[in-house]
Length: 269
Image (cartoon, rainbow, N blue to C red; front, side, top):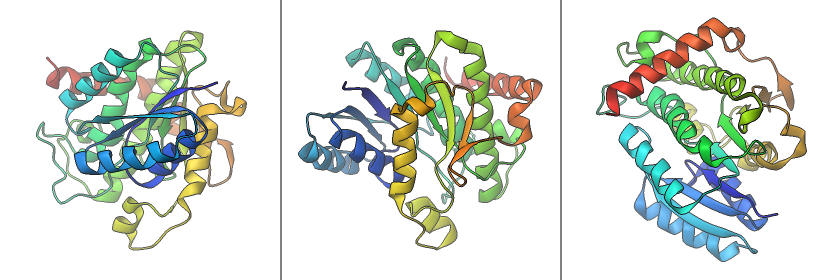
């Protein structure tokens, strides 16, 4: 059965490889990107290999929460049902790490944008749906003031905190939805894969991107993940595992989500 699947950050890296696999398998794939030229090129390339699948594209800058709102509205305007949301887009380093709203771009793109997008799109998703959130083996305790853009830190530390944060809200939202919404799963696709992010951050070629794409494909569609809502899959070891202890601490997860909601409320009027 054809599924309708939205992938953020689908114009390169793991996102592109995952989109390629899904389109080739006959699914309707909604591509997100922030470069009009790259998005147009990827849509054309994937449309050419579609075997019964369909491709659409959506332009948005996920560091801008008003763009995230517009993206959700654009998807909802064309689709009454969304089967899978893969929150893949991520940032590690950038020449200007502060967004126009004063946030650290790692928290904006890696944590807050996927939270807002998921909240807005959950009404389109049945209990059989999936939200797959890109986590990482790099996870560090979240500084509340850093989440709000009031603390500056190194690329590596900001990235690790943002990835623990998405893992924390994944479990929090899964517990809140219970059986009334889609399964929400945090996935470490594999450390040091050959994405542009890894090459820029560490100066190494990295591993085969298809390793990450294959686990995202499984998380989105396989029965193995159907009852995995709120869990963390670590593809470094190829199985479900315990995330950082903070992601299992309900009080800390509650506080984090309140912080995210406060940030969004301060931007979206």
